Image (tube, rainbow, N blue to C red):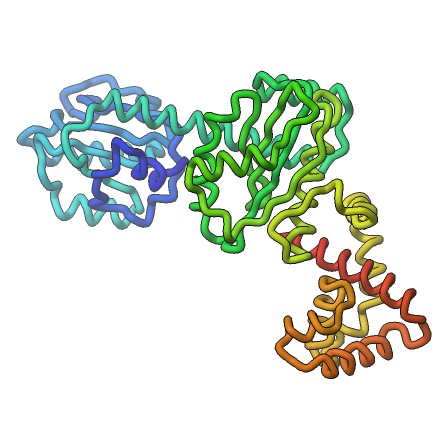
Length: 385
């Protein structure tokens, strides 16, 4: 959490930044109250009176009719590593211009309350937000581990205990991403579903989102249920791509379900389909496991076979055509439509591609090899964003 996040809380939404706008990136780990600690009348002031990375709240009563006390307070807060000062405009509606200029120079944010917000409520909301963010970070770390490491059954049980959810016997997972990766609003809309997941959770991984549901039945129609929820909350799905895992035993096969959902969604993107089920991937699942377990070996194969198409002197339309040719499963007419050209143009390009990568292979061997190379290339591109 940083000062900018602090200003986005419901209780601080009416706060204004009066100085130090360039310091809004500073981290916030605590919120504390300043009463009379920096008044010269107070003889004993501990150096640790305010902890570093705190937002300090004050009504500035200690500086009533003595604006010079404000300088002492701001300088000390900066020295102590405070992240910002937020003041209630009951004594001072506006702070001295020179003090604001100094705060600007030091990139020290000074915030003015928007109304009659209570100090205690600000502290409670800030801590609640920080706790939520900490748990989200914890879940992100867990999902990264499940995706990228080989974990034992004992480790799976330990992870599930740490998550501390009432998981049922079987797990169903969907992985979702939208075409507009830069816009995170779609994720927020899907987090609305979390109250429905009494035995599951929602978390993120690499700009995608996992919806995880556990259930006592092995026959649950998870996709149908998820679509009903999306309709119930009027969440648009036109730009979303979905990948679904198979049903797995939660206590021993949780990582398999996580990876299956993620890679099913990747394959849906590759095939330009809105939805993909891992159980329908057939031999593509072998390519997924090959790339996941030995990406270097997989990419060595890609470069050895498709390398001629990546050379600078080669027409870039050739690799684009090769990719579409594989995505469209060798259908020349569909490839031509996708590239807005005549089928004969595609046939000419495919002839050039064969001359460059495999002049002696027959049709069956050529398609088999180029399909594997292109899919591995796309897998690598989409999993390393």
